[in-house]
Amino acid sequence: MSEISVPQSFSIPEDASMADSVFRHEKESPDFVPFERLVDGTWTKVTAKEFAAQVRAVAKGLIASGIELGDRVAILSSTRYEWVLLDYAIWTAGGATVAIYETSSADQSQWILEDSGTSLLIVENDELAAVVKEVAEGAPTVREVLRIAPGDGAKGAVEELIARGTAITDEQVEERRKSVTAESAATLIYTSGTTGRPKGVQLKHRNLYAESAAAAIQLPDAMVPGNRTLLFLPLAHVFARLISFAAFDSKVTVAHTSDLTTLLDQFAVFKPNFILSVPRVFEKVYNSAKQKAYDGGKGKIFEKASDTAIEYSQALETGGPGLGLKLKHALFDKLVYGKLRAALGGQATSAVSGGAALGARLGHFFRGVGINVLEGYGLTETTGGIIMNTPGNQKVGTVGRPFNGHAAKIAEDGELLLKGPVVFEGYWQNDKATEEAIRDGWFHTGDIGTLDADGFISITGRKKELIVTAGGKNVAPAVLEDSLRAHPLISQVIVVGDGKPFIGALITLDPEALPGWKERNNVPADATVADLIKNPDLIAEIDAAVAETNKKVSKAEAIKKYRILDVDFSVESGELTPTLKLKRNIIHEVHGAEIAAIYG
Image (cartoon, rainbow, N blue to C red; front, side, top):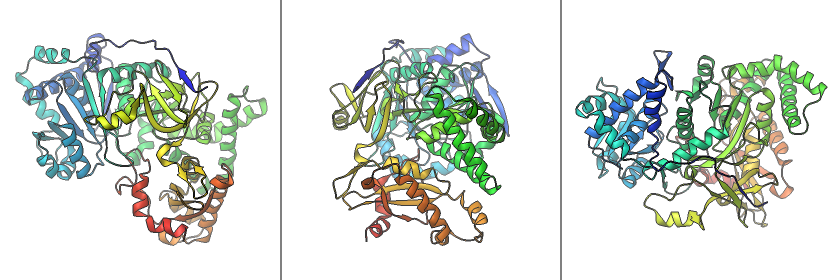
């Protein structure tokens, strides 16, 4: 099989606007709680009636501020309630939201503001305002900058806009809202760009409407009225955004946080029913649990529990577990799995993973523990998800089958091509890039994939990331990198070797795992990472991890040499995207000497 098409069971009204659900909920379910906000340490409910009143009032302020139909309003902020409030208010006022990551540099922000023709910029706080002050003042179309949470006692953006809009009538808001159609621009999201200038992806209201309708079909256990989820990924990224509006449309309660350091504590209090995340967070949860077990002298128990969970999950796909496996699983459920579920709030039975490959090992582990992680696939250009495993139709290790109403096929060179209502029409003001990406009605993803006989798709790498060794061997780095990152000591991995005689790797250490490792290995607590990368015991552990990873590939694809760096890759250093993907060109530039040393 090289192509699969799934029939469409939903329709998109010509006058579809993503703001419509705000006022539908207000009228039909005024007491429904779409959001909870953390106020003075307590989760506080926001009803549909209250939210609609706030959206209407802020939309009035946007209209009073001169925002016309189709104007762009940019939001530069971490994930928080006001982000969503402003998003719906912008749509209600007939505008389009330009999403900017809070980690964006001044240069990146300048490109987005100028390329998008943004009229109004709303930033989170004084710190971010200072970062973009000069570029905002220099952007020819930006008329004003407002701050959501100013530190000088001034009115915040929401309060300021509400105050400005008092002279605008409800009828004026309705007239503006009704001017929006399914073909109106809803948002501009700039690809985070592992290479080159970010491209503006224009998504229309019909794209978002289709994504929400399809997500409700794909996630029948999650998108259920009354369910709860804690959103912590950047709302500037399409993945978090789609869950936000899909949950709202499905009457799921959403809370927001940007504090990842206390995430498990927040899970314990908020108790989400399902979790949205990128694979690195699931890896950290697994590695943290494993590390704690070893630190507490229960490492062997954890290893047996982990193996049992994976075996149990695998058995679910091959006729079901036998009695012996069921008994072992029940024992470890009391000893280990229950504690893991409790760490995620105790109520979560499913999760959605996207943004990068999760890997079969982690997928089986979490399903065996009792939290079914549904892996999916999508890009900014596909409004987020377009392929996904579902509760009743799942193959762990694949990204699933196309969404309702969508099609996929594998080109002769292995590239994954996609088609359907969530797929964008083109890049903002960039006809050349659009013509390269959309050919013969198919969006060319740039990802290499396979399609099995049951229609399940697996992603094996990026076309541009394929490494071709001097011997002519094509190597997809993701298999090696994903496997190595599963080790508790390892934070990030980049596989190298393009044009070289063999495959190598740069490895960074996870700072959260090091204190426990030092204690177990009688290494002084004040030993630095530079000290540790010379430690023979640590090197032996990394050697073992590399050897285990090399079993997954052919001899020609195996890592022959590696170097451990004394610094980690980070978003701040520019080496990772905001969704923690490797910016390979930047890493090669910054760590060129270390890469050269592998082959020296």
